Length: 199
Image (cartoon, rainbow, N blue to C red; front, side, top):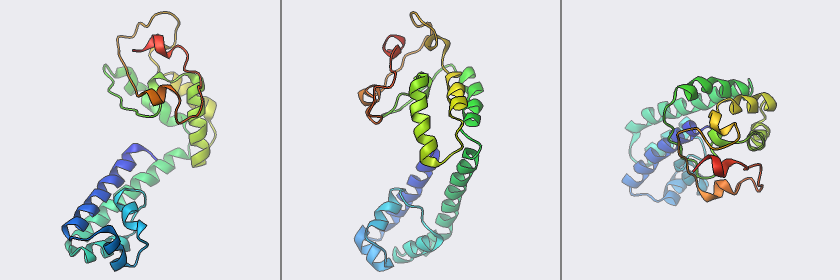
């Protein structure tokens, strides 16, 4: 799921949490009033589960905020639409969204990237990108255009990172040690040449 959709779900969950706390209810108390499993409140508040219209009406009813229901339902529908659009785009494979970003990367003068667990796409080698994208394609059951998608991502790399010798790209980058070690990958997948290309 793209970060934009996750953030929208988290924002909706934060609004639900605020209503619950304003009503003076614990998560377990609200779940009991609504007849839900006690974990459902936490999942909704943390964006791990998408609420139905009835969920939101019940939430607002038990939190004594029925006037908030319509706005929350509209927000939830917007989040669902974002997710469906992402899924629709995914059915065309991964090459198209990779290519679509290339002009933006070419025009950019400054990148500010926060990535706590993986090497940012801008600095990925072909082998590293292949591992990441293959996992993503398999997990989301997308059309397998892996080779074309990796090639498109490699086109976005700064020329200095695609050639040998000292870096000519006037930029600096840093990321958490876990991403440099391939922590989530469980592998040392081709991180060669990154150390002397970036700092």
